[in-house]
Image (tube, rainbow, N blue to C red; front, side, top):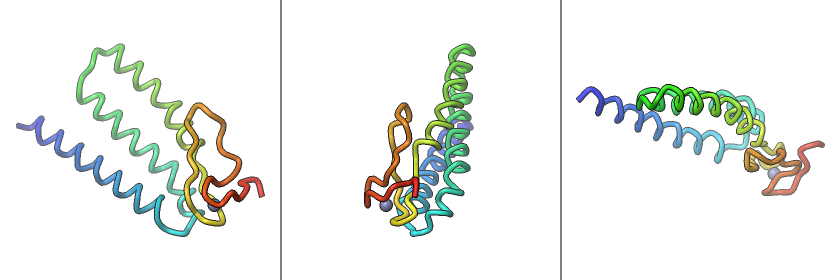
Length: 112
Ligand SMILES: [Zn+2]
């Protein structure tokens, strides 16, 4: 029973994060605020995923491997998302590629 409640709690947090991400980063015109909030949001959501992994109690070695994998992944996710100063929309590149140099929506260069 307690375990089910925990799963529901995780599901609700996950839903909240998804809705929050949409409201904060897909909508709104304030690129500076998005840039400021993005690292905190990414770290927080990955911490939630980490907590879920710990809760599922995989073999210790697997757990450590996954957590060790998540730290650079979090950093790369933060780095791979840019917010345009003209249209304030997010440009994402796959985490294994270099960060984008221009906005994928309005083509404005990020280096101006
Ligand atoms: Zn743009």
